[in-house]
Image 1 (cartoon, one colour):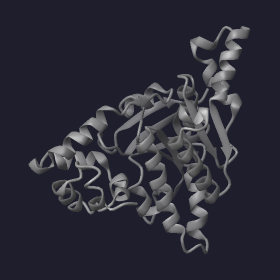
Image 2 (image 1 turned 45 degrees about the vertical axis):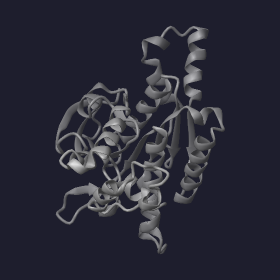
Image 3 (image 1 turned 90 degrees about the horizontal axis):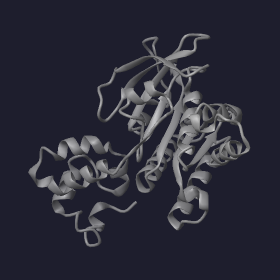
Image 4 (image 1 turned 90 degrees about the vertical axis):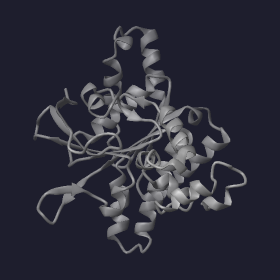
Length: 301
């Protein structure tokens, strides 16, 4: 993407002070800026009198960002109200920990607010029946008459699920979505507010372990594209990631050190075998301390 110094004439905000500030954080292009932690930049900018323009820009951006409820009060309370618009949130956890459950609940909740959801399903885990169950738990859809059934179907229609089997197919769909959003074609795409990839690690792990020499580059490109969609189009992005064994014997998020800087928010889910409640803790959050935990979050019925 374009270097910052080439944009100064078109965007006066990107003046020499702005460029010096960004360079001090190893930011030299629009891509570098989008991949950086905007809240960390805001904290740094508030301590530098020469960065008032950046300070105001970031503050305006933060005030204009909203949150969408996940549909679970315990999770929303833990992360400050819900999933933040314009950010990428990652759910980390072992198999059967509740990651897909949170994705389906979030999709159901967002779709009920007349918004479209794009759901990239990599493991055949998307379930219209479970979505209908979550929607049906709302008092707006409990009577079962014809009008309510029609409303229920309208909500289901707002969740557009694509089976995805490799990272290249994901890139194709994301680029198609980006083009549609920019050109404002496709009625449903114009109202997309939530993009889910369940799971991102299922797509990326094979190219990292295989013989593809561009595996690491493709992983970083995927992270950049997801964050670009979130930032430029005010979309909430939610992805899931599995865990792997660490050198110390403890589990850790998959995809390695390079990936961990990509998500704005990382949340760890765990569940006792056969249990109906989960524990969730914050691994990374721009506004909250790591390690903060919500216990006994009920996701299963």
